Each structure stands twice: as C-alpha cells, then as structure tokens.
Length: 250
Ligand code: SF4
Figure (cartoon, protein in one colour):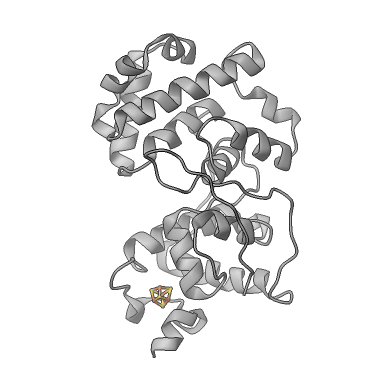
C-alpha cells in the first residue's frame, strides 16, 4: 500500500480537492509493486471501458477556467456553461474586464455561479499581474514540478485542477485524482488515504507515463458507472481479484 501524506487548504464553497501537495516524485511504498498493479488495473479497466487517448482541445487558460466551471456540476452543464462564457466574451481579457456579478449571470446554469465567477476574476487578474497578459504560455518554460507549483499558487487552484491543466491542455505526465479516482484507488488498495489530494500525492509519482491519461479517464468512468460510492457493482467488475475491498467482503 502506498503511504498517506498530505495537507489540505479549504476552497470556500467548492469541493475540497484543492489541497497543497508535495510536487517532488517520491519513491513507491509497495516495494516496487505499484507500477505492475497499476498496469493490471489499467488493463482491466480498458477491457471494461475501452482505450483512451489524449486529444488536447483547449489552451491552458481555457482548460483552467473550464475546470473551475466543472466543480459541483455535471460534465454536460459545465460544457454548456463554458460555451456560454466563450460566446459572451471575445477574449479572456474581456472576461477579466467584466464584473463578477456579470460573469455569474452568464454561468448561472452551472451552479455556485457567484463563487465560480469570483474565482475566475481572481485567477485572470493574477495571470495578468504575473505575465502582463492573460495566458499560461510561461508554463512551457517550466518543468512539470515548477508548472504544478505555479498553478497551485493561483487563487483557489488545487492539485487536481493543476494536474488537469497540465495533463489535458499540455499533455504533461501529471496524474489528477478526483473523488472517483480517490474512491477506486482506496477500495482497490492502491492507497490508504482520506482525501483525493493525498491520493494524488501518492499515486502521481508512480503511475507509468504511458498509461497515465487512460488510467485517469477509466478510473473516473469506473467510479461513476461501477465502483459507485453506494452499492458498487463488484459482481461485474473486472478488478475483483485485485480489489482489497472486494476480497475483504467475499
Ligand atoms: S471489485 Fe467492487 S469495490 Fe473493487 S473496484 Fe470493483 S466495483 Fe469497486
């Protein structure tokens, strides 16, 4: 089992994935077995949900704003909300020039609109202050740890959001852990952690780069469709033999 270690900071009104993380790659606790176990989990999930390949679709600022909009709502709603924002404003500079209440009205459908709008305003203002324009091109000159540290220094941006920006927009090998990945990882016995941020701290250093995106996507799908918080469908799960939670109840 991979050991537990993390600290957490609150993100007012939003899910508590946004906790501080160590960024260094740390050794794998389960005596060299984690990559092999992770590959078995990946293979089982590919049999259940199919292969996944990364196709970056948004530039980094767009990805960051989109992830802010995904919090506490469905993918469909967050996509609609993001599309509404892009339709309403011609550029991120135009978004930054708008007031938080104006932005909140545009993104109302996604829920927590006032909180998300304030966060968007804060993030865009910080990017402009740091770079003289609204962009994340500076990440290109940073290694993965530096880029992760910079992103998590932005207001309200935690480890999952930072990892999603790095992985989805830039194809960097950084493993994001949301509530589904966290639940599946703990049930299977990959980690023994209390918070997604702690799970990310443990798993990110040991997930092989070549399966990283696919494993993330399929663990999320597994958590949504099969390994649900309540009444997981273990009888049709391809991970049964590797799952500590299931073995303990068999
Ligand atoms: S066997 Fe059950 S608890 Fe284990 S991963 Fe599968 S669905 Fe989740």
